Image (cartoon, rainbow, N blue to C red):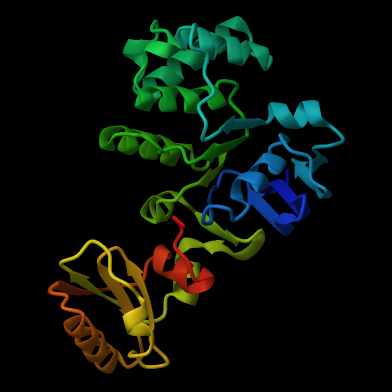
Length: 312
């Protein structure tokens, strides 16, 4: 069997005059966790909806295990599980009922569906909520149930769209650890705005912006390729600083971005760039509260590639 479980070829999708996805080519390997990264409006969700069969592309094809999704939709859909960012649960069924019903709907026997439901409830910290109605769960529990429902039929490919949105810290760790446990057993494609989570979870990352694929590779490879210089963070005593004061002052080869009240600076002439940045801050009446230097991370790389934050 091929190591490629999902293949997207030349996917294009327009919404009137908006080119949402522009000639996307992507191969996803069996058993890997792929981080699908991009800012709001980059085309992530549209791409995922086409890859899981929820949206028909204008051009291009999607293959699951070598079979085109548009030619063998029933078999392809059975191999896919989807947990959308918008919660999809049954408010008037218990957690256990929802999972067993979903498993049987996809063809599992009653015994296998029950076994699968119990396993997922245990893994996602919902065992003691098995008999609770969906509507009575907290938002974080509903999010975990949403993920469990996508897994009820034991799919080969799992799509998770912002799976940690709305989770408390303890639930975030639980979900993260569960996703890690799937590595090698199931292919997971996950979108997230949290670059730290992307680094922790992903074997490879796919960076998309304005509908185009910008980079695809192992996390460490992408960091080596784009990481470059160390980053110096200068934190001030205000919540938001304006980038305008730094554009004319910093050396031409210096790169920077502003994240709230912190200036993130990288330059081959760091001493000169740092002196100019501190001078600009002093002229604005800003007080520096901390300065630290660290290695580039995925968020730094993303901003250098796209010119904007993942959260924009």
